[in-house]
Image (cartoon, rainbow, N blue to C red):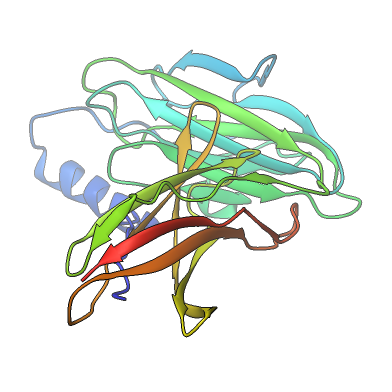
Length: 267
C-alpha cells in the first residue's frame, strides 16, 4: 500500500518580509505603500465577544489587537481569513503585553503566502489571563483591509468523536483514493491528529496491512480529516479489507478509535 504524498504549505519566514520591505524602500518602486512599523503602545484591544469576529486594517500601522481571556490548561485555536487578494498575518501575545511591534516576540505567529492563517496555543499552568490576538499586514492592503477570524477555546476532554473514513465499497489495485472522516471537537489544521489503519482478511483472520497519516482541515466548525492511499496486488479476484481512524492522543484529547468499515479490493 503506497504512502500518500504529503500535504503541506510553504511558510513565510520573518526574514522574507523584512527583505521585501528593504527592496521596496530602496528601489522606490511604484505599488502599495509599505505599512509603518508600530512603535510604543499597542492599539487599544477590542474584546472578543463571539466565535467569529470581523475587522478592518487601517493605516498607518495596519494592525488590530483583540483581547480574550483563556484559562489555565485551556487550548486556543484562532483562524483568520483575509479579504480576497489580501495577505494578512496573525500572532498571539501573552497577558500583560503593551508593545506588539516586534512580531518575533509573540507567543505564536502564523505567516503564510495567502490563504487562511491559523494559530494554536495551550495555556501553561498558572498562565491563564487575557491574551491578545493581533491581525496585521506588512504592506498596506491593495484593495480592502477587511478580515474575519474564528475563535475556539477548549478545556481538556475525556473523549473525542471520530468516524471511520468513507472508503469505497470496492476499490481497485493501482488506483489512487482519497477518503474523509469527521473529527470533533475542532482540531488544529497543522497537527497530524488521525492515523488510518488498514487490515485485510487472510487465512481465516484479520491481519494488519499498514497505516497512513491523515491531514486535518476546517470544515463547518469542526475538523474533517483526509487520507490518500492505494493498493498493490497481483492475480485476480477480490480480497476483503477494512479500515478505521485512530485519533492520536494530544494535550487536550485521549487516543480513541472509530469503528471498522469493511470494503473489497479487486485485483
